[in-house]
View 1 (cartoon, rainbow, N blue to C red):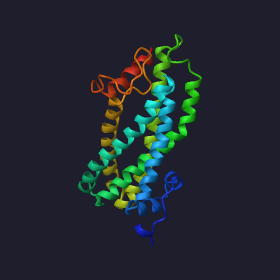
View 2 (view 1 turned 90 degrees about the vertical axis):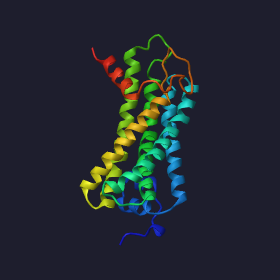
View 3 (view 1 turned 45 degrees about the horizontal axis):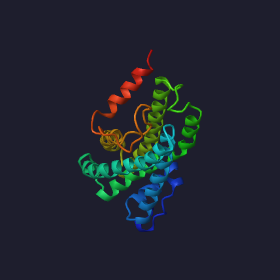
View 4 (view 1 turned 180 degrees about the vertical axis):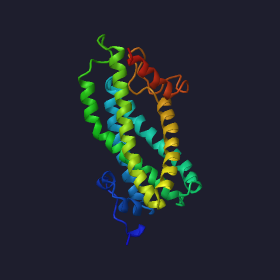
Amino acid sequence: MNPSPANATPLSLTSLLRGETETIAAWSAGRLARQWAFHLAVIVVGAGAYGAAMGWWRSPEQALYVAIKFPLIILLTTLGNALINGMLAPLLGLNIPFRQSANAVIMSFTISAAILGGFSPLVAFLVWNTPPLSSAAVTALAYNSILLTHVAAIALAGTAGNMRLFQLLVRLGGNRPTAIRVQLAWLSGNLFLGSQLVWIGRPFIGAPTLPVEFLRPNALAGNFYEAVLHSIQQLMP
């Protein structure tokens, strides 16, 4: 017999990363304020540490800015998509209350943030062994390689979080087709909102020819996908 929400085992980071679906499902149906505090703490610490490592290549000031902005973007994406996903789930065949869909969303982002926190020492090591962004030795190849490394790390962390989310959706919905429909709809919203918030929140690495700023004056111009495509084109011979 599954534990009732009121008596559910507290959800730990170990339970999340291992994908202990029974424990996660029991928690998702509950109203545990302290558990939300735990998720918020993991997101702030994990994403903050990764953000600091990301911004350090430009300057310590940039590292501080990104350590603040990166967790904020994840939390805003979580909030925005929790509202949308709560309405989409019943339409796609997953009859769960809004609270439970919000719990599922923040669970997946918590896993991603924890993985990014684990990546932060590796990113810091990479930055340490790359010529400073302000030096003449830095080429477009080095800059775009660092940028795409961050994109790959964030994509990997997001994939892991969504794999655990899919396992939870299968359990809650009772079948894989429903879980696939819901996951694809939720993932589309996450990618669209999250990537645009990242674009608006730039700079993160910081271009050597531009000043260190919390936000760019033209923050609302262009989009994330154009920037990634441009970086890929710069790496091609």
